[in-house]
Length: 130
Image (tube, rainbow, N blue to C red; front, top):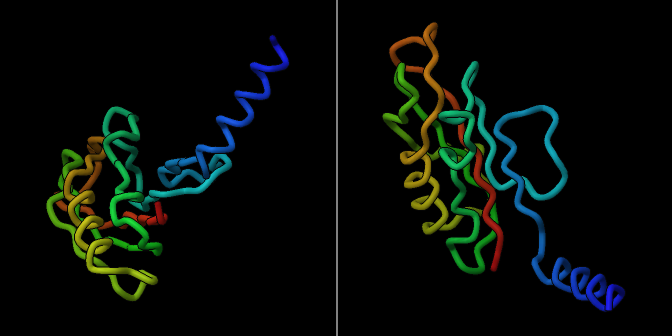
């Protein structure tokens, strides 16, 4: 029975496909496909919870590519503007561009007492075909 359960768990894990890892700008990323990453000096996701920098990685059907979004964050960590940086994006479709901006605007970062009134950074999204 135990051997049968181990075989089933192995089969289940193989069916799930690539593991999604949200890096969060860390230099010591875990293994797997990174679907969202960011560069925003001195900031972490709000409450150190990566849920606040979510990924639209599977939202555009069979589209695959990368989208870089230039963000402006206010003193409290809220994204106040988001625009696509086409020069840093590859193989992007209209769906990917729209979803990247939409998700970037929903992102929230930690409060930083020493931050300027408006801070600039990037969120990088990787889209994977379903």
